[in-house]
Image (cartoon, rainbow, N blue to C red; front, side):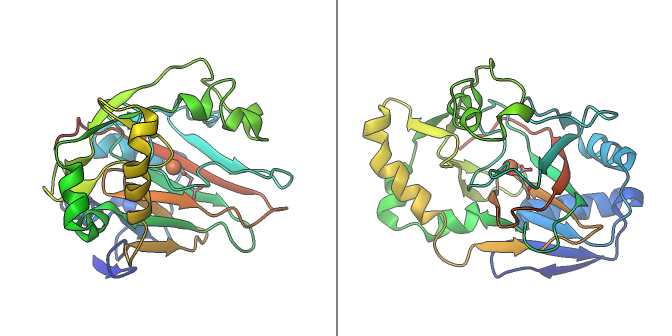
Length: 275
Ligand SMILES: O=C(O)CCC(=O)C(=O)O
Ligand SMILES: [Fe+2]
């Protein structure tokens, strides 16, 4: 198995392994690489829906997404798709999946099933590098803070996504979510400090209103994306990406209007987070 970094501080391309047939030792090495680099990319994989589910269960469990359409024959698989006549896409802004759950999903396994001729890349940003790059003042300001996360403003019947052309394919509009996490967490496996707020789902600091929280939150959202902590993936048929939601943010580019794109996603179960 060979590891080739995709960018100085985020992402790694892993070659010399077949995900569907990897050994336990290879699985351990893959997990470690994802915890550290944030996202790992595997090319030329033969990875059927059955392989996808088997891999997710083997990793340690599957969290079924409450909002996205599910694959008809395999309910553990969420379908992330955009029709040729659709304008908006799923995940088309920087975010981390499921931070609105008190035990958030560890990560996701995304498989390219149908790609546009050009475009539709995905970007990731490393939140360990983001934390390291914060000024001493910002590090002191976030020390000990906790934040409230929810998805209600995105997915509810009067939420952001309901007003777009994705609305008809979404589920779960009557769900209510909410979770509190430290603003800086320690990665459960590497121990690295990670900035754990994101502009999609983090609403306010605990003990402060939204208005009181916004100036510092906005500074953190901006700081999380400056510098060289990002990588970008150009998908090809057979590409699989696995990312760590604690270590990274991600953003799906929406630059392929008029073309169909379909990805299959399994969300991996995680653990409670601590400072
Ligand atoms: O379509 C993509 O590249 C990623 C979409 C997304 O945010 C997700 O699957 O969690
Ligand atoms: Fe996402």
